Amino acid sequence: MSDIIVIGGGIAGLSAAARLSADARVTVLEMESATGYHASGRSAALIEENYGAPSVQALNKASMGHFEDGKYLTQRGLLIVAQADDTEAFNHDLDHMGVHAISPSEALDMVPILDPAKVAHAGYHAEAFDIDTDRLMQDFIRTIRAGGGQVITDATVTEIRQDSHGWHIRAGGEYSAPTLVNAAGAWADLVAGIAGVTPLGIIPHRRSMARLAAPGGHDTTRWPMFFGTGESWYAKPDAGALLVSPAEEVATHPHDAYADDMTLAEGLDRYEQMVMHPVTKPVATWAGLRSFAPDRTLVLGRDPDVPEFVWCAGQGGYGFQTSPAASTFLADLVMGRAPALDATTVAALRPDRLRL
Image (cartoon, rainbow, N blue to C red; front, side, top):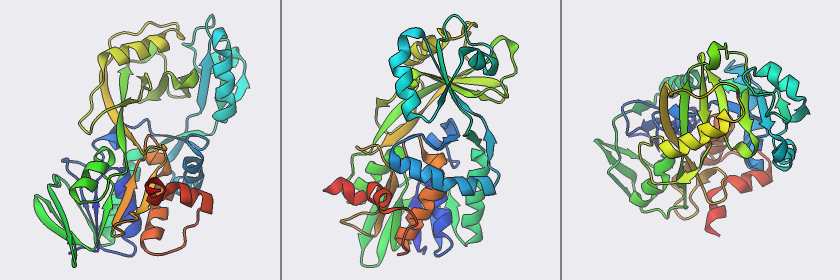
């Protein structure tokens, strides 16, 4: 019998389990044949401290020490480009995304495929970093195992019941523990329902992605991640290629997501309008699910009605970049320690805010 069972083997569940394993014997149950299969395996893998709601930004900033100490980061930079008729939207991005205005010629120096006839405005922020997501997840798994815990794959949860001895979970095998952590991503509300806990309204949203061959044979290694205004599309260098996304958010149901062809075509067209090289057939396409609570902020902590049920959900697109601080915060709450985060951030993250 474990002390704590974590349902979900993405970055949220693995990081939470790793932090909890310092004080408890933890078992992670993942329904797929490998960890990090869904949202975690389809992430843009970037951290920019000013990205997200205030509570997300607080977690970003609190996570930087872990990332830097573990040497998980590589500088990428973030560039926003806009046409002349997008001035208002561009100025809004300047105010909210922590970028500073640069000249169009400076933007073209950074990303030489941009069309000089189209780029009227540009903004840049150097302090945006790629995260070595695979190494981060593997290090969390090593920490879990070093603490006597285990990560079990092919473990689809079919039954959850609670009695005076704790939680009893059927997921291929039988697992029991006094405390249950729900880190099931897009399936978080479904897991809550199986456990007899009131769901919180966490809804998955689809985001599509295409991998393009390096445009014009360019070396993309040192290019920043670059965005259209209002995050209407983005492009990110990746292993010699370019990832391009329409950055859509379409509410859907929990499933193994796939790219929507029409939405992807529209996003690729918005990207293509700003560059000099036409889009050829993508090398690959896929989609992931970014799951949000109604207020678009992470949900971390004990359920107000069933305190033995712990929420670790609603990461949206911020799971990797917040994982060090979010998992520390969650472990502190579960173990009865005072969290290091400020009171405003604590209140914004706790599940009871959604039951008022």
